[in-house]
Length: 278
Image 1: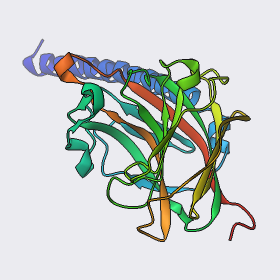
Image 2: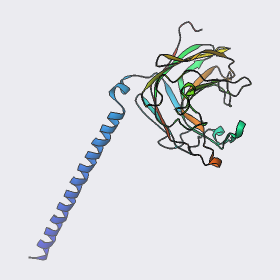
Image 3: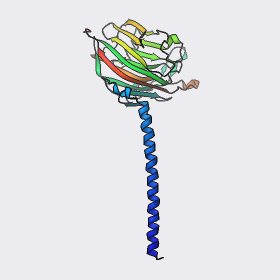
Image 4: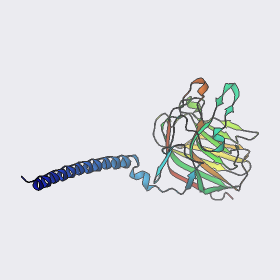
């Protein structure tokens, strides 16, 4: 066999090997793509995508990690792991409270709803579905799932907290006008909706930002916070903004504590002004 023929056969064998390799690689890629596609379709069901939301939003400062916030269509997922320090200026500030409470920093993954805004002296209903996939069980490291804010400092009209590891009568907490001189923390309502699971729950925050302001909270048709009046300390701008997502104190490393990973999801977010509120 001549050298030229031998070289041609070697070339053909090499091309066949390369072709088989490419076919196998493409099959593996398509299989992986189909699995991923199936996973996404299972995770974001048709019902999730069909319900439209009326909001626009931006990240609050920035996300700690690339997977701290993800969204698709009508689904918004937030994740905090231990040490996910928020990117807002106040998140790196330590705090020492009563009875030895200490945090070196705050952990945060939040979005700010930019439209619609809550214009001053109006009544609104903020509604959404929410579920917890993990976390919200870090003892005295209370975690917010909604905030209403106006000023750029630490004054906040409303902070809503969840704690799945608390007594049933104390799993919800609402801090009204924190950062002011007359802060009220209200703990209302036994956990009649089963927060220990990972089912979806329907929330309604009925909020008036008149002076004085009022807040009422209903979960799955159960009144968790009766209509409560408080002195609103957040009138720096002509409107309020809503923040949703996870915000909590960092674990006390001096005591060797570690925060568990919190993952929560929201969908069907709607903000509407009540008729006749002006």
